[in-house]
Length: 325
Ligand code: KDG
Image (cartoon, rainbow, N blue to C red; front, side, top):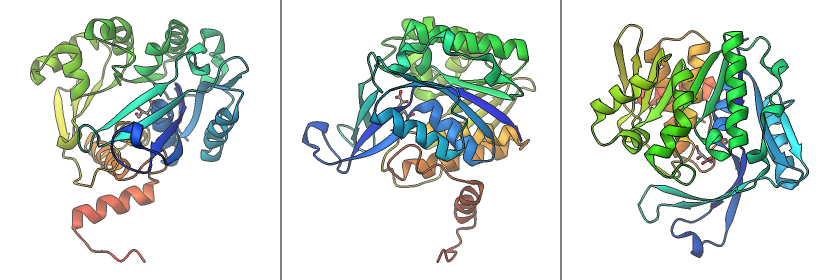
């Protein structure tokens, strides 16, 4: 079985039952979510053996985060319980002010995960590992987190473990392009599989898509695959070793909560890579998992198994009103 290790912050997501401005929301659902963990859980559900490195508070929320990972079958020996700092929380605002778009409000400053340090990165967790996944959120959390992520990268380089990195820019954490490039460049440079999105590219480099790809490729010196998520326009993968370009359209679904779609995409794409599927297939799996995720609330709950992913794809491709009951 292929093995992947991920690292990042997992938070409690408070997602309102209604749409509109957060201040008017009175009823919330409690979910567990965090970009890198979403990706790792998607991979675990698609048959990859996974481990996760994070830190949670010694509190009720930390407990539910650890037990969520355990219930998925993800190895939690890299999950630290920090008695001095709380688990991070964030609130979701759906369809306001922009319809179908989700905004988030973080309460994560000083969270347990932001105190994760290089001492918390245990090399033994990387034994027999095929892939390491981290995103731009983690080094943006704090200098300690940045150093922890760099230590993990250094271990992977030494052990020849493939590095997957998603730029995953959060403007709340990386205020402008200069700051973002300062923090992210080293990770973009080290990754063999690099994910980004049209929003991240224009935030970093400007509005011309072709120029943006060139600018990104210049930094991404070790990238074999550059994967660009284009939201409603689907996704694109550049195989930088052969120069070939692959594309897949998105699946038309009703958007309930767009959060976590990019993570579902990454997880399904990476699981496909580790299982030896083609780039075309992996783009299809990624777009399908992303579409399934935007159709429901919560980042983790909608992540599909192979069986469900295949049923979703088959239903769209054959337009078959297959009986599901
Ligand atoms: O990718 C979805 C995430 O944005 C969300 O669940 C929370 O990890 C998160 C973050 O830092 O924004």
